[in-house]
Image (cartoon, rainbow, N blue to C red; front, side, top):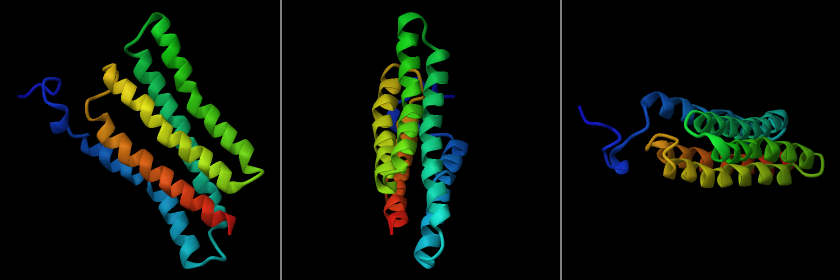
Length: 158
């Protein structure tokens, strides 16, 4: 049996469960957008829930970082990783505050947080704190959810 650690990163694939569950996570905003497109008089609440959902996912990413770091790092490095891990929740909170002024701005804050999260994900891979397949899953999911969140924000404004 081949040792996955010794395999080149390009040949390491995410587990099927991670792929299925990860991509299923794009369904809520897709359904909200579809409802709004099919019947513009409906779906406003679904779009709002879609934005809330994306903010929850952003916060969830921070939780994943916390767990990844806590299981492998100690000392001052752990303090740094844990501090970074709370940032997504603060960004999600900021989006909630901005929501009262503009749904598009709130969607943009969450989308920027999702895209920015990829920088931390890359650092986790470089540090060896997450599996080699991590970015193959994180990039399409973060980019996909960011795009869907922006679209939902734009549609909710109408």
